[in-house]
Structure formats: structure tokens, C-alpha cells
Image (tube, rainbow, N blue to C red; front, side, top):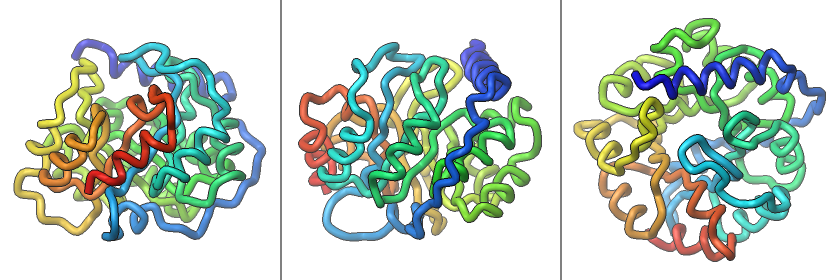
Length: 259
């Protein structure tokens, strides 16, 4: 391992220790199902548009824009759901961003973070998340404070769904033995930050399960959407290419119209 995953985990633990997730918003999540939103067949690709201002691989992605306005533009472009980075270190995120957006849009929302402590799940419920991200590699490396099954149960106790992220077929098998609601395939290796859309193809080879599959990272064009759909992905999480676009509405719409 290169140590990048360890850095991500340490930064997340630092944010927990600094009280970033000691929130007091008490916002109700919607009654909309994230799993249903990303698996319902209809016109257009199911896009989870992600609000992010920075990342470990890209540095500053874009100068700050009004996060509420960006979220509304994403919905106007046809996004089926919104993902919001809440990790402050390296990602420039904030639970406050999530809370502000939750009050402003009605589509399902995913809290995107490096979750390794129950307090982050508690915060997700407090800011009104419909779904949280858990990363298989974080648990396999022993960075989380408890087992992945306990984390999933805690989220379900709050009536939140769980998107469990994997990077290869071995992690996929592990994920399928849990009660997660959605599987995410991250095309980016979180330990090296290298990216390949072939990861979705390789990971899903032979998969015939009924849980919706989201392809994440490295998606830049309608052609990518078409390719990944052919690999078995039912939805697509896109952040950087949308955030860097001059017109958020058009950036989302052109991806939606790929299918």
C-alpha cells in the first residue's frame, strides 16, 4: 500500500476528533429511496451529481461556488440524486453544506465521506441524509471502529440506506454478504489514486445480482456513460467533470441524455 488510504483515514479521524460531526441540525431526510432513484428505468441515465470543491488527486477542482445554487442547477439538469462531500480535509467539504442543500432540494441525497466512526453516521442522520457511503477497503484495513455490519445496521436504524463502495471483484463478494442497499464500484484505486473505467467492467464480470450498481469516478463524457452502462452499471456518480463545467445544468443534462 502506498499509504494514501491511511492518510484518508487519519484525516477523517482528525475531523471526528475536531468535532466536525458534532452537528445539531435535526433535519428530516426525505421519504425518497436512493436505491429506487438510481435503479428506476426511464428516459435518460441515472446521474448522482456530486458537489465537491477539492480532492486528493486533483487538488482544488473549482473555486467556491454557492453550493445551494449548484445543487439546484444539478437537479434542473436532470440529476436523479445529489452527493455532497462532507469531509473537510483534502476534499473541502462540510456537514453544513449538506444541511443547506438538504433544505433546498427534494431529490435523494448521499453523504459522501470517509466514514470510520459512528459519530459520522449520527451526523448523516442529523443533516437529513437519505444514504451514506461506506468503503469496503476502510473496513478491510481495520481503520473503522467496528464491523461493517454494525455500521450498516446503525444507518438502517436511522432509516438511511447504505451505498457500499468496492474496487474489485473480491471486495464485491464481501459487499454482497452484507445488507447494504446499493453497490458502488469506484474506478479510482483509493490507495494509489490511479483510475480506470475498466475497473467497473472487471468488477461486475459475471454479476447477476439485484442490487443497483453505481459506477463512480473518472466519468467525463456521454461516451463514458454509454460504456459503463454496457458493463452493468445502473447509475453513475459524477463530480469533477460537472463541477469544472461552465454551465452546471448543461453539464448534467448531456450526461443524462447519454442513454
